[in-house]
Length: 481
Image (cartoon, rainbow, N blue to C red; front, side, top):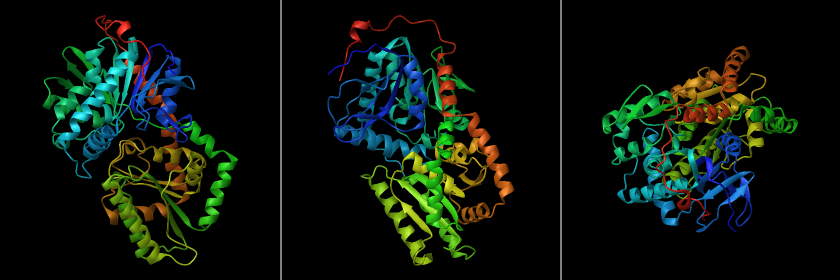
């Protein structure tokens, strides 16, 4: 059944809808995550529409309303999921943008589906956006959409936000389609990055590989001013604090500590199972800690939570196997009956359970090779209401810019990482409190709602005179599957 709706004053375009099916063929549920939480109130206030893939191969899903937000599904075939999503997005762009820590694959057969799917998203947005409305395009899957949408609807204001790192000139230069990607992003009025370095990389690349010129945060695109700057994303701070104050969550954290051993120092890692996260290097550092003999299974334990990701992709199967072999090796060499040095959970945990683990952990290990931001680090900080605990943080995360009172580590240096983790384990309580109090203040000050407000305010500020040469409503309105 088609549901009638008005065009959106604010339209969000993302690879995925903000909802998922709880079970095959079942009803819709709002997906967890800070982005959805932050944008929902703004979308409801501005008659918002969210455009995205439903996450399945269902060929003809109709538009539908869920909890006050209108959702417009974009259909993808199995071949498009393989080529646009698993191929170009996640086997070309993802490794390239993460400092090529895995060799990017430049497969020409993936480019045309990437263009086609981006064009489909742009067409849907052109139909859904109200006259002189605002469109927010999310992430690396859809970098061509801003340019395509500007050609279709020059009246709308377009924002693009990249949630992952944006690479330096030397790496991005490898991409055969580098100019097309840059031109696509330049269709936006505001282009947001996680860090200042990402924005600077983008402006340098525009100056080198396009006819447009930029300086500082501003780029001149045929007389149109494009703003490119950092808008670091964050978390729903109050939600994490509320969960960390919940008696049931606190009781669960105490249960976890009792199960692991009250007198053991608990280290925690929580990561998506991805080669960018450096989980295997972290495990090698933990191996070195046990090997040097200053700690044993009786006084130290690591809980590693690895959330399954892209499990059909060969590179992810390889990293999963490598990690599981390392866990077995460490436990086999240093464990004993009734106690192991590494507890490995390959599953997704509900947020309540995750916060309980944050509360139980003495040391949080966030050591990816490269990360756009890393919100796990911020969630751990937000949960530490007594200002204790130590955050060991990779210097190659976007969050390292804000969370500079964490204990910084180079994840490529196994011996150095082992030494820094040992320092974190032995850190006096007074120093823990000084560091954590400062970290909590940073995270409290800039939440995901601050990010959403700052980005949308930049998009709505200094609007040019309205352009009236857009297609008439009769060709754009209507309900579509």
